[in-house]
Image (tube, rainbow, N blue to C red):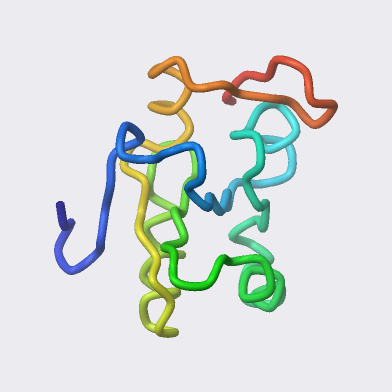
Length: 114
């Protein structure tokens, strides 16, 4: 599915080995996130871009997620312009949580999406 020219997938299309980039802010991340996701807040993204290029798996897409999909769409657009195979996760963490996917807090316990 494409939103304009932006590659987009639903939460249900993410598997256990999908690489997830969470671009929400620190307080949102601390309250609850997808286990194993890489966290780089959108507000710091350009400055910390190298962290993504080091962590992203070769030959696999970067699934960009925020709370509902707006910020992640902007970051996905930026990544695509940089030549990175990136896709926006439609509905973000709200749909992730509503779908029954595990959400952990910054201590690794049960988290919630704020």
